[in-house]
Image (cartoon, rainbow, N blue to C red; front, side, top):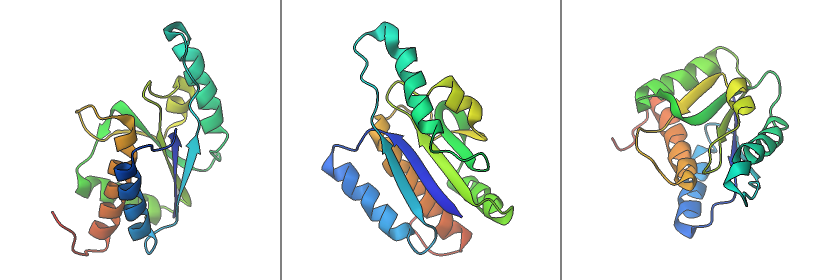
Length: 156
């Protein structure tokens, strides 16, 4: 199964980029992972936030095929334990899913049209994180999921 992560913006902090790159490197034996970075729409007026989200949403949707399984990262999404998340990915693989796409929105969230396209809405935690942390947390959990699937050791 191919995994894509569509994310708004680039990671600016070196420590976050280094951590993300490390887990992407570790994922190579398990699954191809592609990160698509989309420039966020600059919001100059808070009243235009929805318009910006809609513009970002169109850019996101242009990278999604009709048959792709889409998981959006949302505040009110379903929370998983690492073991349950691993089982979910394993089920997708076993059901013949060719491509799973994770969508990480901007600090303002994601548009309704992207949320509506999601096959699963997922939350990393009830806690609030900088949205750039989400990418590092997500790739680490994907890596952990494959280690769990394969019954390989990884720190608990």
